[in-house]
Structures are given as C-alpha cells and as structure tokens.
Length: 128
Image 1 (cartoon, rainbow, N blue to C red):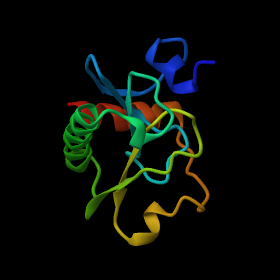
Image 2 (image 1 turned 45 degrees about the horizontal axis):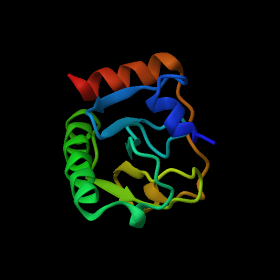
Image 3 (image 1 turned 60 degrees about the vertical axis):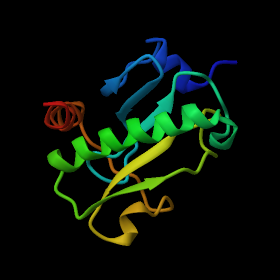
C-alpha cells in the first residue's frame, strides 16, 4: 500500500511544495513544530532512511541542505534543526525545523496549527 507521502508525490494529496526534482520532494509539514517546519522525502518509497542507497542518501542530504538554507532566509531562527525519526509514516523522511531553542525540536510538544493562508504565506516567503 502506498504511503501518504507517495500519494503526495503522485499528486493525489495536495501539499505546500517548497521544491522538487526527479528524486526528492520538500514540502511544509501540516502539523509543524515551528513556522517553516518542512519535510524532505525521496520519491522512491523506502520505509527506513538507513535502507536508502548510500549515493541517494548523500544526494538527499544535499537537497535537504538547500531547503534548510532557503527556510533560514525566510523564517527568523538561530539555526535549522534536523531530525529523522521514522516512526510516523512508513516512508523515509527528514524533518527540517527552524530553531531558537532546543525545545523547538521536541516532538512530544503540541503541534502548531496555521490557517491555509498562513501556510501559503510561509511557503511564498521560502520559495521566493
């Protein structure tokens, strides 16, 4: 069965797309820890990040770095945090979270909720 991320890749489920190429997709998390929280996923459906081919994993990190730098320019923060948890969705993914303090990347915290308009504004700020 296709994961929710595969359905996003195939356009069956909409997303706030930051960037895409033939191998990866980056989009805003709809249940973010912070404004600008994004997910980077490979287009190939792999459950566990450490099952990704080494070369592809390296490319994924380079793609994630580019997205992180874009977010940093658009969302005021001290650093960009990166997390790989892999328990929520059976499709490898990297979380990019704008950080101002260590607690900003605590996944046990309640998630934030933004209106579609606020999500679109954040997306626009990141991609311009």
